[in-house]
Image (cartoon, helix red, strand yellow):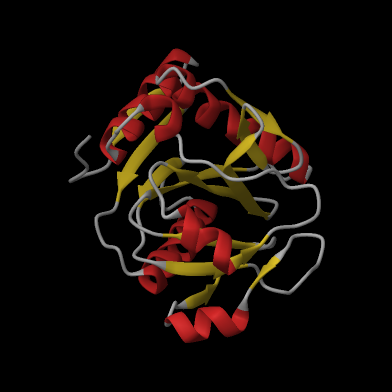
Length: 218
């Protein structure tokens, strides 16, 4: 039975939170930390992949500058995502046995837990290749990943009660991407902590043993 350690970070500084992603990845890769799942929330910002690519969409650079919205680069690829207090970020840090998984497999494997969590909340979500989670024709989560022979990271957003007006003004989606929606459209008002608890229930239901990191409170 797989065991995952649960990390819940309270800090909302986007730059520090992304730096922590890198630190956790290296520590899991080296074996210093066990496999784990992390949850956190950022203050308002845009988080972009390492390079501009029309395939993944981008953002309105002039508007972001005018609005004073911080733009931070992450270590994983892909396009641009909008973070604010209504968006829950989740990350899976897992070990590899020397064989690299395909991006599609990494996204699909990680999305099962997010889809399971949403099912716990009565939200009929499903994985949408290559890296989305959709609910009834709306995008509620996007994912990005990185992998080495020893470890992989898959992280994603989950729109709970985000400012969709700002998101839609700032983000330029790729062709074919459905409109975005908050899961509160299906659940009604809901706190991020309730979503984290749903993740934990879904993990346990899938046969994962859950262990809280020191100081973590669900």
